[in-house]
Image (cartoon, rainbow, N blue to C red; front, side, top):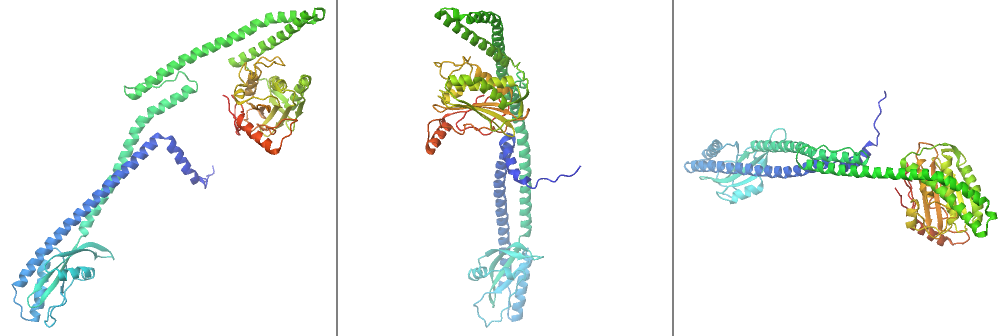
Length: 573
């Protein structure tokens, strides 16, 4: 097996994946927010504690250094006051012994002494003495303060040189000493705070580790608690999905007496009620379907007898008086309509019962459309409509049930002739890589948006006062939609008042493969125009835009939805 390197652009998907995970996971959001807020609280508390400890530790060491320096300076000054100096050498020895006394009285080994400038230069005073580590860090500001401060103490925070080119924090305390016969000297004592800094670093590291451990512990606790809270919600969500999918027997387990148990009992009660009502409705629906089917079958036998008798009377109408002859013609027409109504009712009952099965065979949609057009051409001429067939594509066989598709095409063309107001009716067939489509365009009265929304309803008529040229039953478009859905196809409509209508049937080119796009546009390319009425280009554009705003497309129960929704259209479920 060959190793497959990850995609070089995988990192581009990481933000979107994290954002998707953030939106979908309540547990992740809860834990993350808790950790962020906890981290902020621990950070603020840790910084405050570190600063407080640092200040207290520094102040403690400063007070200690001031006390230590004051004690050493007082002891040294007492020794100097009791001494008897008469020569330069004895004065030099006196300064050395004084510094040794200061060093013995304090914990520091960083000591320096400088003669205060501006004194009598004729006196041979002892030279300045200082520690090499202390001399570079004594600032001029501190020396000025000590020179002018008398016996007061002054201090300054400094960085004392250490090994390896590093520095240690420290404090330098300065005051004045008076040597008899030689004048005043500046005494500086340095204190190294390295041990205090180590203590502070230990405390800070301890606080950091404790804070991190506390954040991890709080995160784990939050994750466990949220898991206990979210898991019943997940169970309820999964149960709801299964219930919505049709598994009416699924229920949420009822455990304990807490709020989740109460939720489970309420949900299960609702599910029981829904199951009971759905079963009741299903039973009523089955009874209704059986009733329609039984009535249709029972009426078939007497209707056959009545039709035979009516045909005999209709064939002999020429020998009857005019009124009786007209009555025979009306009887014959209504018997045929009644027969078609029974057939449509039986077909609808089969769809409702789910007992319809396709009988597919390779069929050329163009040839099928030509046959239907030839069949209805006489009817179109009687209504003053020109029936045209345009087929730029679709000249190949597609697996379909020719009887059902022929019924759909005949119904669409018949409706176009009936509502075409004598205008031309254009039937177009075309195809693309995934589908073959047939569109029936008329330029008649058209429909408004409300009528379009109901055009596939059973027994619905846009204008109940209009006569039915073909003696329709009111179930033709409903059955056509079911036929299209059974083929995993689309049946959609566009219409505008005064601009006509366009019905589009789209079927998959290959069985089992979905439709990506229909090869025929909807709204049609000539939306907003009407034959015989010239329009300017601006008027046509205005009409087309109005059609896009006021009309709709219908699509129901198909295996795939149109990826390019129509402007102003609605889908019916």
